Length: 271
Image (cartoon, rainbow, N blue to C red; front, side, top):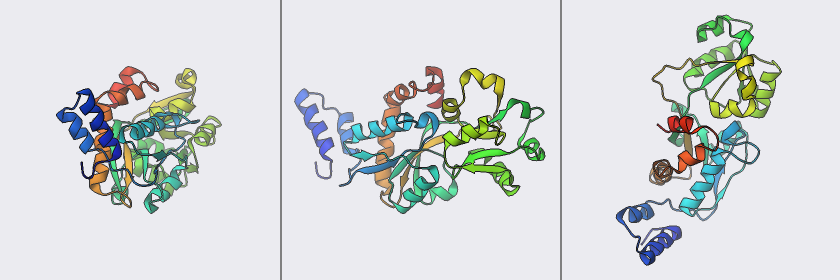
């Protein structure tokens, strides 16, 4: 049992005494991540149903990581911009609900856990004859709101063009972003259903806003687990990914997601 964690040894002892030791149990115990001598720091952000007011998908995932690994976790709530600074410096170990970019992949390990399509949410009266990103760019009256340090996936080049034109309003957090959208301080945001659904009244969405998806139909964007390369080797990072994939395979992730979206929506996110 050399190199195995205390939690893994306890799991094996339980299974031996109860007659439940199987090849899969042994493999699970051997592949558990090694717990560091200190708590693992997993940063959360106020981000709609991913995390808001003390609860959310990312918090549930962090709790499940701790339960399955036997490691201690701390989950500070930080602005998105500061999270990236802290994880790059190694003062934060992990974060969730992130978008992978080539630049970020040089510094961090990325592991996808659910499909997520970014869409444009725009005041309905501003969406007339708006059929493409080019149409938005040509409408010089239109401005976009964004949370600092948030990447926009397929829409990133479009956002950068708007930024060069001085047509992006940056804010520190999602709460303020949607309050300003409601107040018409800008016209639109790019977001995920798990985020905008927590801030905009579903009963008023159809009357007040248009939802536009400009991503290619076959594009599969993902929310991802991020682990800093400062503190974790590729082997250790892969063990955390295996633990997370186990949550998906045994249905635990589906049960967590169903707290925030319908069963059909949850299943589609996990395809």
